[in-house]
Length: 460
Image 1 (cartoon, one colour):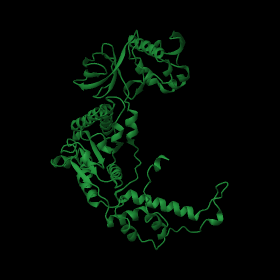
Image 2 (image 1 turned 60 degrees about the horizontal axis):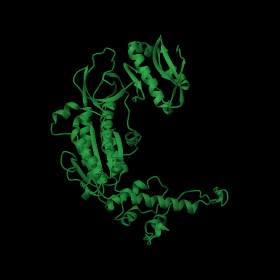
Image 3 (image 1 turned 60 degrees about the vertical axis):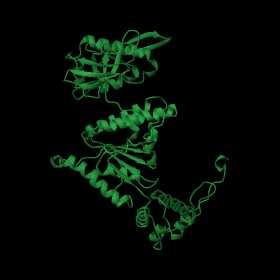
Image 4 (image 1 turned 30 degrees about the vertical axis):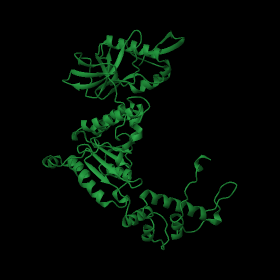
């Protein structure tokens, strides 16, 4: 059972009420009253026994620091601060470790590991610190890249749980990508090159590592560059690849790395690559970073303004990270661009983007295949001639055909289904017994002349 009592203190004209949690006479942590029930459910008997391995001095110091943090950050009391055990790891969950007048605690990152007790810590606002952990109270198995809590003398107290930057987390696409190579019409040569150059090495490395090691010339490419006009299936192809090899798929654009403050773009690049490497290790599968419009951050360097300098820093950091990870990191970068002439020559050299694939506008045979894919689930009339539609669609991309099909369906629905003018209900007498999209429905959209906007039309 938990024993608890209240404590009040005045700080900056704000009264704070804090609850102390005491386990067998030892102060462990404080928590707000509306969170006490959550803590009771989270801390099991096994966890309580593990907490008793901490010395009384460490527990008291930790509790005092958390109390002062609550006073200093009164408005952030809604976050739970407790000690939790995950298997054999002791962690401090989401603490607010800010400095105040009496107690100083910092966060640092394990940059290098020399032994089980010797680490090189990368501090936030200072030099790298060598730390020798001789205390038996340290129960965690620290690895490179872990974030830890340290005292003002840089003695490690505990390991922080793994956290992912919200921007990077938003780039991670869910695993429910329902796409196959058969869903993308045309580009047979590109598909074959990707199967031989990427999918085959990845599958051999994962399923038959002895064969992969014997084929010393075979390797998983670091980067693949997709070049082509808009709407030709570059993004869709990247999603299909991630589905085929069951990869962690990070989808972002070059513009996402252009940030407001100096250094934020380079920091986001680091976070993205670190997260991709950790996800590859954690899930035991390859990570794919897909960057659309990559020329936005990796264009030819210009220093005409402060904004150009910041983009140049981000581009430099991106090039450094592409050189920094090896094949063992199981990370592949796929870039897509519609403006290859803007790319930095340092980016497209061998060793960074080993494969460069061009996505042209589809030819007539590929257009026929695209029309077949886009209309395979539609109730078409037998007189619909896909070959004729393909011949009329020259100089159109796959995205253009998708838009033509969408407009055709909308026009057909508008003609066949009538709405009441008052309550917007379907009139049953106008609903046809059988849906039947005619050839003329496609031709009306496909052959409709495209009017050019008049001057200042968008501003009226």
